[in-house]
Amino acid sequence: MKSFTQILVAATALATQVCATPTLYLAGDSTMALGGGGTGTQGFGEYLKYSFSGINVVNKAVAGRSARSYWNEGKFAALADLVVAGDYVLFEFGHNDGGSLSTTDNNRTDCYGAGSETCISPVTGETVYTYVFYLLQAGRLMTAKGAHVVVASPTPDNPWESGTFSYSSPRFTGYGQTVVTSLGSLAAFVDHGTYVANRFQSLGATAVDAFYPNDHTHTSPAGANVVAGAFMKGLMCGGSALSAYSKNTTSSIAGSCV
Ligand SMILES: *[C@@H]1O[C@H](CO)[C@@H](O)[C@H](O)[C@H]1NC(C)=O
Ligand SMILES: *[C@@H]1O[C@H](CO)[C@@H](O)[C@H](O)[C@H]1NC(C)=O
Image 1 (tube, rainbow, N blue to C red):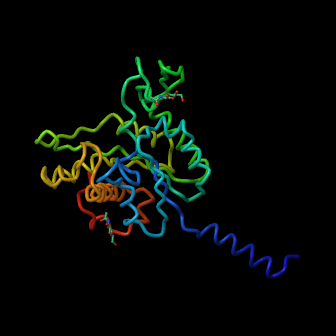
Image 2 (image 1 turned 180 degrees about the vertical axis):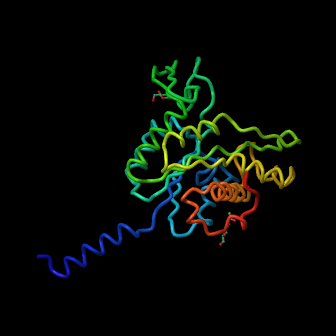
Image 3 (image 1 turned 90 degrees about the vertical axis):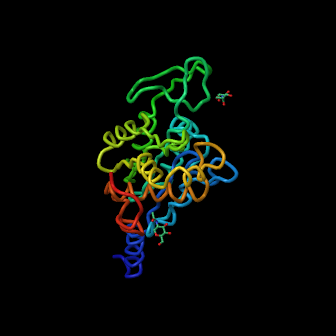
């Protein structure tokens, strides 16, 4: 027969397992990463932390990475080792996933396509898969452990760059939706790119140009804060289970649902 102490220890361990604070891991590129794309810039992942409570936010984004290189470097596998049931992982890639594999290979470009297409790297002979393929296999590692996956479309390059506002969803937006549909009920999609573009349209050219100190991709800390807010708005409007950890109500966050 178990002693009272043994029962108490077992019950406490179970309660800790069930009630432990979950973690939201962030997997992405420089637009999300600590330090952004260099001096004067910051990744939005650093500002997401201020909008959540009751969940730890751990930023594992790394500048320069694509879905392919994050996979090939073992970074998704390392995250899958860390996650436990009830955790969340946010995937946001796209800025480094384009390009051509016809004569060169920067080890980041994915094979073009939304499904099971494959390419052969003309440099290394590696079989290269699609954005959808890499994120789907990464997502399956997470959901197999009972973790939730949120896939987000990439942030826009400065939509006021030409002087006239212009944004159209990149192909990665549809690809991300495809990944979420295939992953099933533990996955949710946030059209982050559209939510940022809409906020940037209403803020106007002068304010938004000032968010891009170096180039048209990487934002200042102030810009990253707005980009993080737009993510929260999209998340809340979409109704992912992760919304439950938002500090703020949907209506208190700037912007409108689309
Ligand atoms: C791509 O990876 C290969 C094999 O690891 C390496 O030899 C090559 O230098 C890399 N290319 C670039 C552009 O980083
Ligand atoms: C939510 O509220 C906190 C303060 O409690 C603030 O720091 C954060 O920026 C807010 N997030 C959004 C998206 O409005």
